[in-house]
Image (cartoon, rainbow, N blue to C red; front, side, top):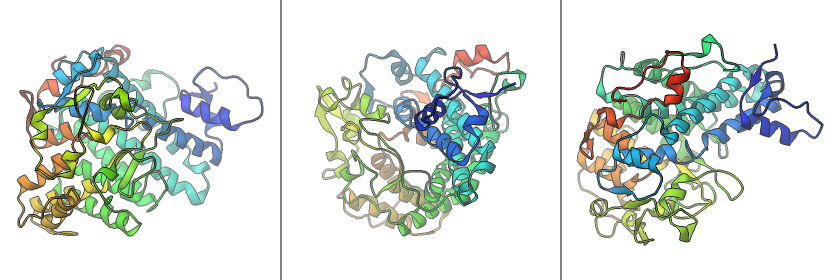
Length: 448
């Protein structure tokens, strides 16, 4: 029986690259022996994985939008007409929320593409096998990290060896049978798999790789995972590796804070970013956070006075906000068709500072120096001494509205809009579509 891989991106790249007439296959399907038959085709499938991860539902914006809306705390408001993000902002999500559904579906589609690549790594040219495998592992780990953060209770809530996480699927799905109905692994099992994928990816990836995943990007993502797990020594070391390798290969903080955003090509500060142009790529952060004057919607997200009050006078980060369409907006996402930064070098300095402070160490540099380099770039004077509160305040201001809000809130055990960090309302529901199709194997989250 012929097997098919149901991935629209694979079909698209193969059809566009082949001049000869092809046998017509089912829509959104391509025969396995075609897609994974050669070095060139597997690499095209890898390009499809990057296309999938850049979906507007994933790193194209919605996972960052949802993080900010869940942690709004009256610092931002959803002003838009779409009910689905409003439900997230109000912490009253329905199991039929189409945005919640599509994050799940797109993440698992991306994971399946990665699994297909990993299953065919032996047909890749020997010289490229490590890189291709590392990129596929990086992408799979990134998606599982987003899924477990949104659809499961936070690691900080405890009971990680019994709390339901998300289904772990580590082999290609090319047809639906009884083996396709996979139950939810525990939170601990999902994090263990993410760490395994990223540690292997870091060892396989090159130091530089144009706009694709690199060794510093894998180390940086590892630092995020370890920070969620409160493994501060490991978070420190991973962030330090990311900084060391990245800066040795030409990366640095952008000259000004504003220069880290609205770029048509990767900034010197980006460790990983989604490429966006008028021809390709999604940037839903621009779509929802900008205004019609710059190609956005109607200004769906507005910045409130309580957030602006957190900045000191003269802070370049405050100066990046602007007034338009009747309210204050984030200048980070003002311009259309600009690269969407996913991991910035500035984050790594702040992670290293926090982790070093908590561990009482100075690996790579002191917490004071790391915080001051971020403050100085923002036009602020250096601190003479630093506290944990100083570090966390700098992190909040430096990374504001970039998708970190709810994940930092949960690991720090804070609350949002009256909801505790571990409240049922702070977790997205498993999409009803998946519950209905799971033959009883998927258990819904508490409260839904």
